[in-house]
Length: 400
Image (cartoon, rainbow, N blue to C red; front, side, top):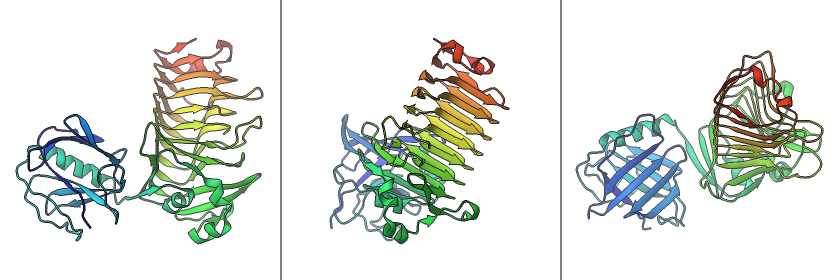
């Protein structure tokens, strides 16, 4: 079966070893010129020819052929120019040496060869960045069953753009849960291993993701994000326990219930977790709390929005190293309760360029904790209800 491949020779640009996006000005053997960007953080490839987009799609896994000095990025989205009805196609980046038609793992390729490269350093940096991701498997999912089956360590799950995943649908399917190994939650006997647990709450079932390491859940479209929801008001939308290196990118998370009855559980909950990242996400109510971060360390929350939660923006407890940047928080709380940030015994909590608007109740509530830092933030809140705001470290902030 014919596969369509691109083989380019790298010509210009040097990236920092800390870069997430690697840009190559490249040409094919016939001197057709391209500009290619490999976005490692979002697992995305963009290629233009003469300013026109010829390829824009996610990649799901990578193969590094050290013998032939080339990288193969697996792409499976048939609507994006490179197709293979029988499986994967590979976008090939070569360091400029003549190469054979086979990767070292035996994957057959039909490729062109060329010589010379002046972007070898950028190529090497991309290889190092891919290696730093560890042994990661890539999954492209379109429904709840595929999503649940894909959950695990060392995995990147890309949800199809515009897809809504209602996790409650699969949790209510006893046969499915049994077949995929979802276990009954027992707080007194938590498994000391990677597992998916099904917890019974007052009005339904809750999924708990336990002891998973290096998991990314993302949508491959910033303009048409995917949504993850649950039905029970007493269930966290996504609940992680004892997990490490969890990343959420471009997803919308919340509850299906949006009415006069407030939720009793939150949207994102991290308990005894480390190294959590939330990038470009929307977290909405009726979830009671946007983010719960308890007995955990290192949260990076950037370019995200938390809104319409019935109680709090964040509830952080006995944790450290939280960095929140370029986020919007609005319409939090109801006529009975509300609070902005509830901090109990947390260290190193910093907000940069964030906005707070229409937060009911106290803006800041702290207990036995060092002052949080606020840099370049805009606060639209009654001055009589700022709570512990005046005890915080404030740098160039505006209160209206």
